[in-house]
Image (cartoon, rainbow, N blue to C red):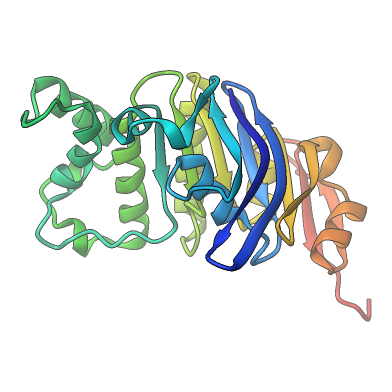
Length: 261
């Protein structure tokens, strides 16, 4: 379980998160939503251990994430950032294999288990055919799937924690669905997934729980069917939205309503 207690976080003198309390149960798939600048990325950085809090704690199964040795933390938590710029000198296979670094002992080389984990992750994400391509020359969709493959190789265990920041941002519809299908499959296998998502409808389709942030605070948290309402969305985003059930899945979806209509 992930437990966040009274978390205050920021960058130098600029405070971003204020008094965050949050629990994410093992095996949940949670969407982080909110307007631009609400603190989603900062919260993910704190959850991953990259950004140290000014006060408060982030615990993973009772262990303080920021007190863990870096390699131990990386064996338990894999993060996929919003912007990835791999070197053109790396092949996709080498890029994915880098996810195995936390599993290496001092001065050890990648072994059979590491190569097997990387290949399993590439097959799982449909990137095996890219293995010998330059990682720096991939398209947006290919790069995002490759980054997720590296995260899967890094934390292949069923109880892994996966943190993603706008994993499908800027991608076309097919790639957005493919990436979230991958995450849902891993979630159904037992992984805990926390994902910042810009697309409200995509979040409602794939996440059973939504956490909304605004101005550095959690303003709404609950099951998707209960919190994804016209009243809540209009209040949080400051725009009129209407909510309706998805015609196939029944999940709540929304669309904008122009002011004059």
